[in-house]
Length: 154
Image 1: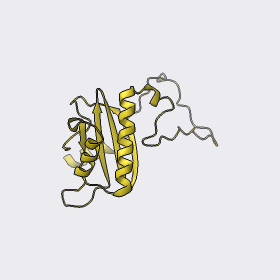
Image 2: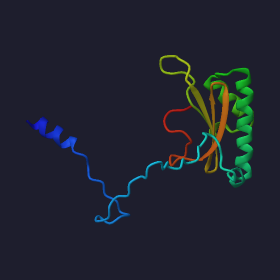
Image 3: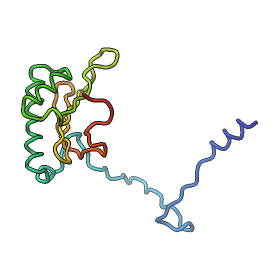
Image 4: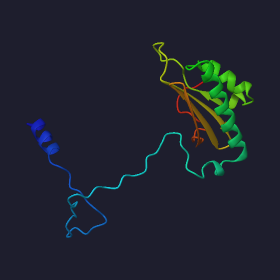
């Protein structure tokens, strides 16, 4: 009986409250043939037109370095190993303490779909991704932990 009461309580839809319209006004309905306007598509890794202008010179240079290194690595090895990526980034002049690289293998030994790298400079993280032999690089803020990645990375 308790289960029936819980199920019945879940079946009723929750009331919709709108702060923009008084309770006595009717809810406007969509007119026939009207189509909602689509919002602009957002491409992962794509920056807004003025985004690169807002980067500090150091971050812009770091972004270019990371992108160059990742493109060079992926040209030789479409699915590079974690240690290979780390050593290439450090060889390019990025301090080892500023580099984070995600795992290149799953716990069961399979290749991951994508491998991520991060290089921290001040309050910016230059994040690079290699997926299906393609490289994308973006800049995000450093996390509250002071790192670029959440969880375990080497």
